[in-house]
Length: 296
Image 1 (cartoon, rainbow, N blue to C red):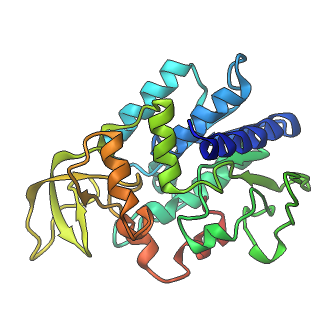
Image 2 (cartoon, rainbow, N blue to C red; image 1 turned 90 degrees about the vertical axis):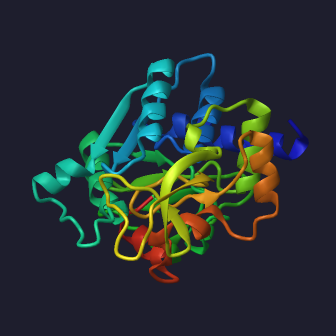
């Protein structure tokens, strides 16, 4: 591992150790995606040789790709982790959230997330978000205070001087913590290569039935099928990011190895969210609007 990756890893380890020392009931958001897989890998390093004293939390939309859920369960069983699942289906069934007309469930994750944080009394929630993903995430501090309603106000972010973090919060508030803030997508993949981090198979090129919509290759599932004028075809694709199947698309790719993926994204001019997440295209402030309400 080169010096730049070692510095990023050391910063993330310090942040995670600060969380373990400062908070009583931390949780780590684990979707089975590449960023959460790297975050979990670093967290294990930060607390080794002791078992990870942090619960894993997944907000399951019910529209996740099956390969990702299988990988999630494999990692949890392998590491003997505590997994807390907030299933959006349950919130829809009892009326706490309402299914959207377009069937997209990514925006519906906020209420189950906040309810679960309150019910489990999690006082810190670690996430794998990075500043290079979106301009709203670029505004986020590493330690980000959320108010009693789970909301985020970018105007009240606390200064973070050098490596000093302030997680002090009032009753009812909690802190979101982003140890990978200063990493890029390329850093993530270089770290995956250096540390041999296991990922779901969908991150590598594979044949899949897909159809073209809004410049992305969508795959059929319980979230929907091709519409009028859309044709299903089998193509060699891979996913750059993991999310709700109704709003996350694949990209054409021949990258079947980590080295291939690194070469591919090294020349890409789009972030993974900009290239494959329809929910981020609703408006220029789509991510910030969701974050203000309590999204990841």
